[in-house]
Each structure stands twice: as structure tokens, then as C-alpha cells.
Image (cartoon, rainbow, N blue to C red; front, side, top):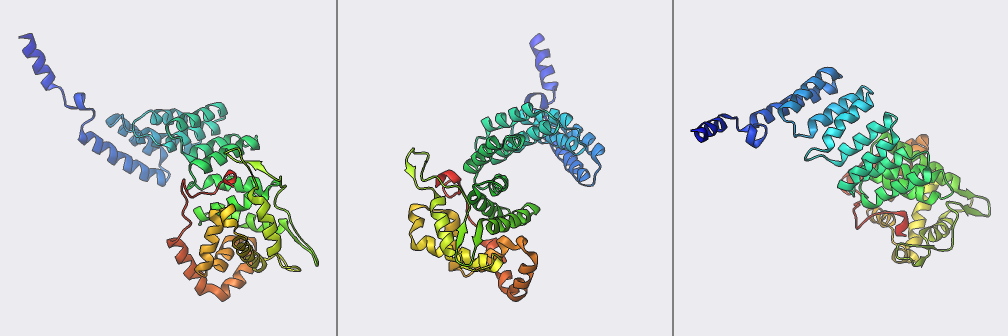
Length: 355
């Protein structure tokens, strides 16, 4: 009889006891969360938070709902409260590297640097190839540029298609004695993030860096983008001639004596540089995906348009004059670029220590 009563009681329990939340509860939670996210977009933060808390109760295993609550608290500048919800998100099934990024960001903005670093490192244990987590580690260490630099470059190495690490590398190197890497990392960034405020910022930075690093006199040209060492060890511990040692001589040969470093002359200089690079067969001894990309642009007749696009924010008035004459061709280039972007991946990347 006791067994019969127990069986009856078990049968009377809802299936959700055995199988988690019912599908109808999950659907309701999803609908509430969708409506809540719409409210977040129009600034109704408190109401959206209440709805998301209901979603959490209906589907407590879903990482998205505490994540969105954490995001609401971030918008309210209550960063440590936000962190408490991101902590709940990161331990749920399906949590992404972005959950750990937001957790680290919340701790950092809340004045908890050590907890922020710990959050990013915890995330890297689960997502070792996450560029966004290395970005976070670089960000919390910007009071120590050497350490920050290392994190940003690790991010580029493991996640070469993630743009923002290149952005910070460009800013660091263009304001250092090793400007060559700022020029190359900055151009990589612009190819990966073509239409943002940061892209406009890097466009001007590249233009200014070229102008400061190329000094043209009546009879002399000085190219000063780095302090060269004759050799440095690569990852295989072999002594190699660094890319910078072929870059500067080619660039010096490319600059026309007496030229003014404006958009037109920079376009000309960059074109002559690439022809020099290939004439000397440096694509074999010092392969670089950016220079291969330049060759492809030349072959398709778009290198001039590309150079003006790349450096356009350095001199907006000069660009406008050029654009007025080349508007149709520039439009064709932008369409082509949207369909033929620089392809980047683990086997096809740009990293300072690959060269």
C-alpha cells in the first residue's frame, strides 16, 4: 500500500520536477525577456529589470536573464550589483566569453581591479582564444603599458579577426619609438572595423604618423618609424632580420624628393613601396598579409581609392577635393570592398612577432 501511495504521489508531481522547467514556462520567460530588452532600449530600466527577474524564476538555468539584469545595472552605473548578476550568468550552461567580459568590466568600473583580472582569467580558462578577454586584461592594465601591450598582442595572436586589440596597439605604437607597428596594426584595425568613430580616429592617427615619420628635404629623405636592432629572436629562437629592417629602406626609396607629405604623395609613396617590396622578393623572405592585400588592390585598380579611404580623416579638405573628381570610382571601390574584405584568420594573420 505504501508503495502504491508513493507511486501515486510521484505521478501527481509536475513533469518540471523531473525535467526542469516546462517548455511553456521557458517560452513565457523568453517572451518576457524579449519585451524587457525592448524596454531597455527606450530607457525603461526598472520595469525591464522586474520582467527579467520573472524570466529568471521561470527559467533559472538560462544564462541570458541574469546577464541582461547585470546589463541593466551597468546602465544604471551600479557596477558591483551588475557584477553580482554577471557572476550568476557565467556559471550557467551556455555562458559565453562576453559574459566574462562584462563581469570583468563591471568589477573594473566598480573599482575592483583584482576581481576584474580574475574574471577575465577565469573566462580564458573556458575560452582561451577570446580576443575580447585579452582586451579586458589590457584595459585594466593601462597604467602599465608594457603589460597591457602584451595582453593586446596575445589577443591579436589567438583571435586575429577581433578588431579592438589592434585599435589599442595602434594607439600605443604610433605614440612610441616603434611607429611601424602602429601603422600596420592600425591599418589592420581599419580593415576589420570600417565604419566607426574609432576607425575615423585611427585614420587620422595613421596620416599624422606617416607625416611625422617621413621627413623630406630638398636633397634628403629620412624615414624614422622605429629604432632598429640588427636581429631579434623569433619564436623558433632563430636570429632573423625583422620586417622593420626591410620596411624603412623600401619606404625611403619610395618617397620622392621635394614632395609634400599630403594625401596625394602618401598615395604615391605607398604604391612605390609595394612595387619595391615585390621587386626585392620580400614577399618571400618577409611575407605580410597587408602587403599582399595592397598588391590585390593594385591588381583590381583600387589602391588609390583604398589609400584615400584609409587616410581620409588626416586631411578632410584634401580628401573632399579628390573625392569630387573620383566620386563614381570611389563608390565602386566601397561596393567592391564590402564584398572583398581582407580575410583574416589563425593561418592568415598579422602579428608583430610573426616577422
